[in-house]
Each structure stands twice: as structure tokens, then as C-alpha cells.
Length: 148
Image (cartoon, rainbow, N blue to C red; front, side, top):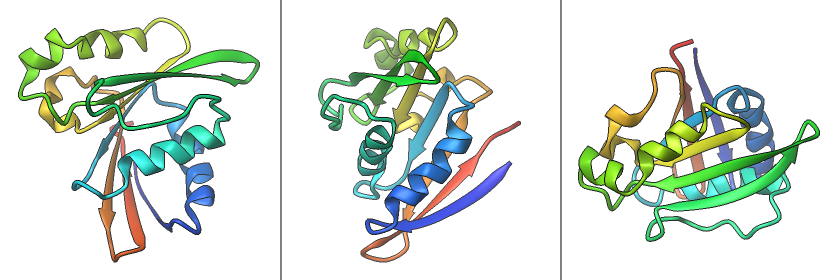
């Protein structure tokens, strides 16, 4: 499956709603795109949509931010990871990124990965790959791809 969603900051909330209808079916979602393309901004709006009570910020230095939200009557966890500072798979494993991915196998946990290209070997075959590109200063295009 491949799909494209175009949006601006004025229309990001409807893009988030459309995105969630697909993303909710995937425990692991990867977010790629150039620096400043809006990966964390989109994730922040997505967390607002899911009514995450915590402040959402980039986990660039912490590597992982954990959020909780209620969905379909059950508490879920989001592990929002940012692999930008990691150099390779060894660093990713040592930093616990493999454990974050593994947590999605048991229970209601999602792992959202910014900069997955830093350790692509850790990404499971079944995941939603998102690429955000800047089409102009206020417009973004999001490509969603899965092997399902």
C-alpha cells in the first residue's frame, strides 16, 4: 500500500485524523524526511489528536519519550524515539532502541521512530514507513508505505 497525504499547518489536524486511520494498525511507524520537514510537529499534533496529556517534544537528546493515552477503552503507550544522533546499529542497540521495538510485541505499545535510516536493521518487516517532504514553505507531502 502506498498513499500520499498533503497538508499545511492550517490543515494538519485533518491530515492527522486521516493518518491515524491507517497508522493505528501498525505497532511500529517510521518517520523520515529532511531536517525541518516537520516530523516532530506532525507527531505532536498526532498526540494532541490522541489526547495524550503530556507535553510532546523531540526526543533528540533523550532518544526516547514515553507517552500514554487511552484508546478503545484501554491504556496505550507510545515510545517516541529519535535516532538522529545514533551512528549505527550497535549504538542503537546499546541505547535500548531494540528494546523499544520489542515492547510493541507484547501489549498495547506503539513505537514511532524518527530517523530510522540510522539503524534500519532494527525495523521489523511489518511497519508503516512515513516520508515527509517539504513542497513549499508552508506545505508538506507525506508518503505512507507498507508491505501489507
